[in-house]
Amino acid sequence: MLRPYAVQDAPDVLNLITQATGREGSLNRFLAQDAAWPRDKVQRRVVDVEGSAVIGMAEVSHFEYLPPGWLRLTLSVAPASRRRGSGSRLYGWVQEQVGDLKPDGLAVSVLDQDPGSRDWALRRGFELHAHRFASQLDLRPEFPLPEFPSGISLRDMQGTSSTDWDRLERLYGDLLTQTPDLAGQPR
Image (cartoon, rainbow, N blue to C red):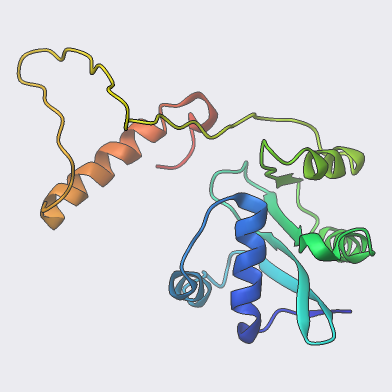
C-alpha cells in the first residue's frame, strides 16, 4: 500500500536509496538535508508498505545537475519484495507526479552493476544519457607512483586544518565542473 513518506520512515528509505544509488550516507545527514530542503524546490516522496514494513520508495525531486525543468527520479524496492507489484505501484505514483508537475524531463541513475534496474528503466522509455562507473585502485600491493615535477608532492589529509579542507573542497569544486559529464553545470 502506498502512503506519503513520514520522518519515521527515514531509516528504511535511506537504506533503499543506498541500495539504488550505491552511495551510503548517515541518517543524521539525511534528516538534516530533508529539513533544509528549499521550499521552492520540488521534493515529493512516497513509500510502499507491507504490514508495518517499508518495502519500497519513490522520490521525484529537483537536482542541480540536471537541465532546467528536469526532475530526478529515485525508485527502489527491497530485493525480497521485488516482482510483487511494488515497483509498478511506485511508478504509477511517479506518473501521477509527472502529470501534476509537468517537468521537461525525468532522469534516473542506475548502478552499472544492476542490469535488472537498467532494463526496468529502458522498458519505461528512459534512454542512456551518460555512463558512469565506479573505479577503484588497490594501493595495498607495491604500486609505483609517478614522478612529480619539482615542488609537487602528495600527502594525506590527516591532521590538517579546516583551512586545508576548505582549499581542497574549492579545488574539487573547480575540477569537477571540468569533467565532460559536468561541464557547464553549477559548481
